[in-house]
Image (cartoon, rainbow, N blue to C red; front, side, top):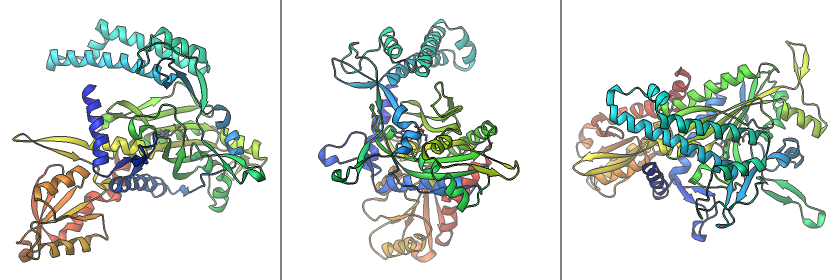
Length: 517
Ligand code: GAP
């Protein structure tokens, strides 16, 4: 675990050093849980968004996109339930004056039991080697069984307290399990209170009686309130989906772990409208589609898992998360929710406008049910960085830091490097860049030794480097070097476009996402 935390710290430092992510307003000492994306970060982020957008709107002829405003009528947030129920249970430690989410403190306690179990398994696996039977060990080892029981008991109590919205019970759990404040080490806790996560501001001048409006905490409501606009103008037939990418804002109480939990972040959400009664079939469908999308990136099948919700949100009749194994454990990256007809019915009620779909096959009108897929761009970004970050031993005490990014998502696809800064090599290298810059992001670099230039490109995850040498001027061939294997081969300049496009194209990545079973 300590080693993993170490990796995480290095990842944060690497992100800053190589222009991926900077703390916001850094020269003013930063702003809590707000980050800026640098020159490489924005390319990676845009590529993630393109991969998602194309997978939704190109691969599904019945999914279309919109881009709705961040500001919306405040009644929307009353209708959606966010004004009354978008709360986190918070608790303060009276000694450190630090504020925590009560549910997170309890979840961390459960994770401790899980860690203990994993440590026992690791130790035993080392001791028994090839003969180790993990399942049998977990079913019989007293320490594993004891921690499993403790975790399950806590889990049952916690899930009930959350479902019943029982704040006193949440506090009691924290006391009973002797959960201490990580800063003061004390158990001197306040009561648990609800805290609404929406940011608000005012529209119009105060003299005219300004209206209190909210910064949207999710993009989904912009889709719901445009359901009829899109359905009618696009003559959409159910089932169909509306996709959107955009900023969302939440005044998170516990904002830490870098870009995992931010106060300003970006979501990629898709609402899929279906016939009532068919929602669970479509829920299963989208669960599988979304998991394939993640796995196609090649970061490792075992890095992902589903986690079904214990406490369903006020609008859902089924919900699961796709979790990714971050350096700090398995964490939610995407939520898939069966939201029933809650949102559309509620908007009907609050707006006084009918939001119905006339189904020609059934010959009657109904309020559609909704399956939602909702993924955070920034969390996806973090999972990709974490999954790609490697420190390779090169022998002779030498190491390299390399981001083994999925090639289609890499900020720069090709670096073109003249071996020396003279003899016409820079001109030839620039000619190659000029030809290929229409196809993908290329970078020209002539400073420092070739070795140093390779390391710089490894550190930002560039899948290909080509070196232009004196021979290139005679044979029009270059040495191409592959990031992951560091192998090199001589190839004709005219073949570069094909070699690189094959690996970095979104087309091949999208094909992969549909091919995975
Ligand atoms: N419309 C449903 C919805 O917003 P959610 O589970 O609250 O559901 C969906 O959020 C996704 O948005 C999460 O899986 C996560 O990836 C991302 N997300 C939520 N809060 C976030 C935050 N504070 N910082 C970064 N990403 C966040």
